[in-house]
Amino acid sequence: MGRPAKPLLSRSSTVAASIEIIDTEGMDAFSMPRVAKQLNVQTSSLYHHFADRRELMTEVAKELMTGATVPEYAPGTDWVEWFVELSLNYRDAILRHPNAALVLVQFLPRDILTRTYEMCARILEDGGVPPHLHVVILDGLEKLALATTLSDLRRGPVDSTEVFPNVDEHRHPTLARALEANQWSSRDLFVVTIRGFLGGVMGSAPAPVSNDSRLDPVGP
Image (cartoon, rainbow, N blue to C red):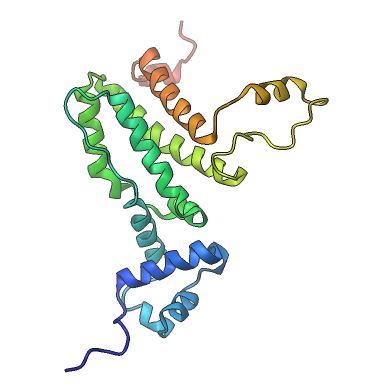
């Protein structure tokens, strides 16, 4: 039996075509009919593999996250620097597909990262971090890394030292002097931000907020 003239439609080929469209044409160009045209199939054929656009976008978000390499870890490794490297890998995975960054915000199911979070919690435990700080660190790093990277993409070009554009030295003299003194790129600032967050959490080491303290924040 001869091979088909074109590859059979699959979930993986559909996801790959979706990412290619988003990368080259932007999110505004993305649609199920556009993906079908890219694959040279009828739009109805896509619905044999995906219930709707949301399911396809969820798979796109998962695929994008496969590019975020989890660093190797050995007992005794500096856990702070391990998390800095992990956060940088997460940032780089987003920057490889800048047009698709918002897909992660809207469609990435958090449970896809549960195994990674389990590994992260074990590393925190191995590093002597109190258990009540684990969720603070894991939740905070995810939000901080994503928000910071999206901010960098909005400013562009990525890794430029021009952090705040359109600053006038006469109207904003203090800020202008600060920018002139800054030698750090966006990537450098990202690393400093991650380290600062981790250092701040560990330095303050807050206790869990009790129900009573939420109700009476001022105290007696």
